Image 1 (tube, rainbow, N blue to C red):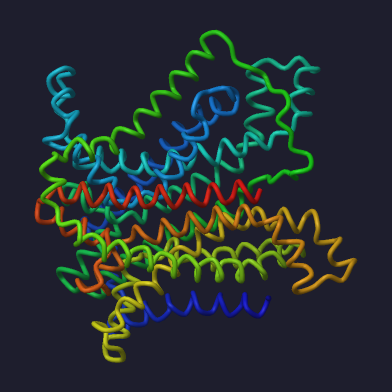
Image 2 (image 1 turned 120 degrees about the vertical axis):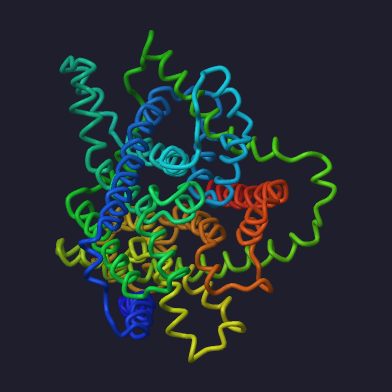
Length: 520
């Protein structure tokens, strides 16, 4: 397995190396160093950091009270449905969200007249407002799930000890609750920051002009419109250094405390009363409504005639292609992620922190590498070697696989660490290897593997940036079809296609949740 792990490291890194080699070899000039003194570059860099910082901070700050409400009030109605909705929001294809937000809060949106007439607010979705709304919608529900799971790991003995020591509410919050969340919140902040810093489709669609341009969009403009390779390279290296450096730092200093399943209990905790109970309950229902409204807006923008006029046959082939590409990418991504975690787990067991962190960064580097640069660089490298028109869809699957590997690793890693902490000494003393060890490990990790597969499957189905470079109309996917409808102002058709894609994603997550529950 260790050999397979190093081979997986080589394959994923090799793709990135080929992409940058394609750009460097094509231009033969290297990065444009003069760009570092350009004022426009400074404004792009500042806005990129600003919007990512605000998005990550607001996502966590807003998620914290909701996670506490779920933890302290186990009798809240529809808690399981809410957590499922949170997962769906996180993996929701960005084009579906953009279509829903435009239908809800755009110039002709459902809610826009209320904001203008009732509140007297001159609302504008495009710009920093829309970018923050979209990023918070995608990432705040994810933060809710992570913080809630970490709160559940607080042992019952900690709460009972706080009761015996007569801790005040503030002391319980600071000593018991915050100590459990602190390291997780740091890692979560870095993860969301990187996602927002590398955001492409949301900023491109909702940015509204040059003042709201990020590094990723600037890279796209430099490659797509100007074909300025040195400028794109310089922007890509800056983005890689900032996002990669931050992610490496929080991975080193922030750590999630994964509690043994044998000691975790949920028997007793302080129950809020009075105004605290009322505030937690209200915040729960408010977030429910905020998450559901953009989805409902998709239906509100479609009339009965639009449903009848749509050529449903045109959706069948893109749906099947989307599903097929997703299954292929998710399956390969899971194999690569599990293989790469083998040497990482070994470094963790040997308490070699520096090597472990470096391997983790290398395994997840695709998270911080600009997707547009990787796509265009690989396209340029392969252009004289491969018939792109014929084999382009294969490279869509390859790049999709590389980009979902970090998500699979981040979700699988804690459970595998937990298995090693509990059973590694036993399996070594019994000299269990290969298939014998796997028969013990598989039942332990199976629920997480199933949920991870559903997650990366839905994530791989929603990409449009890679397809815009390697794809063709003969192999159109649902996200590309939505992009085409929206680009020609066929909003009703875009909404219907978005509903189909969102329904497919929800069905996949529901099925894997059912299978996971039955095997838990």
